Each structure stands twice: as structure tokens, then as C-alpha cells.
Image (cartoon, rainbow over all chains, first blue to last red; front, side):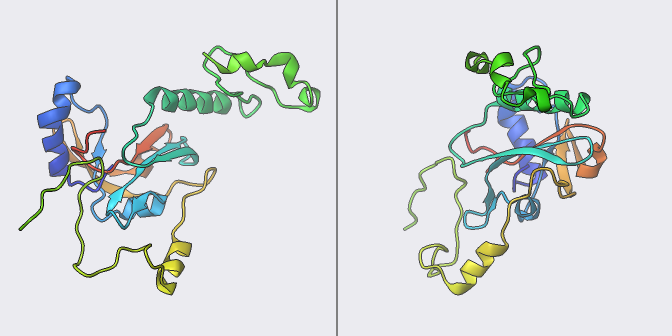
Length: 132
Length: 84
């Protein structure tokens, strides 16, 4: 979503993005002319008149589980967004019984918070497990 | 004579001549405005919206609430053709 019109979105896809992504953009490119939606989410820069690089993970109940906001010159990391999405999905599917430690990826050990785990995280999770 | 704009990652914008850029000399009004501006909170409902969109060759209207029951990654960005 940006403050560009849907016509500009189409031109951008036709003239540039289609040269990088063969079938075009696989999700809707939304238009927020005036920045009202961006303002509601706290990512509209009213001095520059544009949205900042805000990214929100919204769960199936419409609840915001996480966000990240960057200034314009630095791009996001898509694989980190997917990692977070997978972690939130795992936690939700566990019914809240599991938590994912730092650097968790699917297949890695999760934590099961409870009285027995207090002071004992070191037994099940090592710092080198943070890295891939 | 019009000066050339150096293309950067921020979308070039204009403004009224003589208008002071907000932030240089914060006025009382500007400070009050800053207080009401806020970030959404994690764990709370995402504000629902309706927005026009471009998708696979068609112009469509999208409601965030259309996606209830699915996971959504909502991304804002400064503008089309802004390099990053």
C-alpha cells in the first residue's frame, strides 16, 4: 500500500515489476491517496506526504501480532517476515501452549512455558540455536 | 530557473513557499498534534479499511475484513518507482 493511485500501480507493474517478476505482483497493490490508512496505522509521514516502510502481521482474527517500520532507504527482509509469520502460526496452532525462542524456524525446538521451565531454559535451549 | 531534483529513495514532494517545515521550530499546535499521532498496538485489532487496489490486470476494492480467517502481511512503502 502506498499513496500512489491504482493507475500508477498498473504502470509500475507494466513497465518495471513485470521485468523482475514474470507473472506480476501476486497480491493486491493498494492505494492510500491522502494517507488516511497509513495515518491510522501510525506509518504516514505527514511532512513528506508518504508512507514509511511499515509491515504488519495480522492474524485470522484481525489482530495485529507484530510490526516493523523502516525509513525509506533500507529495504525489508522478506524471509524474516516469513519466519515471523511461521512462528506466529506455530504458536497459534499450539493453542498458546508453545512459545518460539529467538531465531526459531520450523523444525527447531520450541519452549513450553510452565512452572517446570522457570530457571531451566538453559537445559533445553542453547544460544547457538539462535543462528541458522 | 527550476532546479533539478536529485532522485533519492524519498518521493520528491513540495509545499507552500514560506511555510516553515514542521519540526524546525515546534509550535504549541505542532506539539499537540504530535501527541494525538500514535502507532497501533500489537495484540489489538487492526483498523479495518477499504482501499482501491490493482490486482492481476484489474482494479478492485479491498476491505481488510475480507481477509478475516486468513493471515495478512500488510506492507506500506513510500511510493512506486522509488528504487528500494
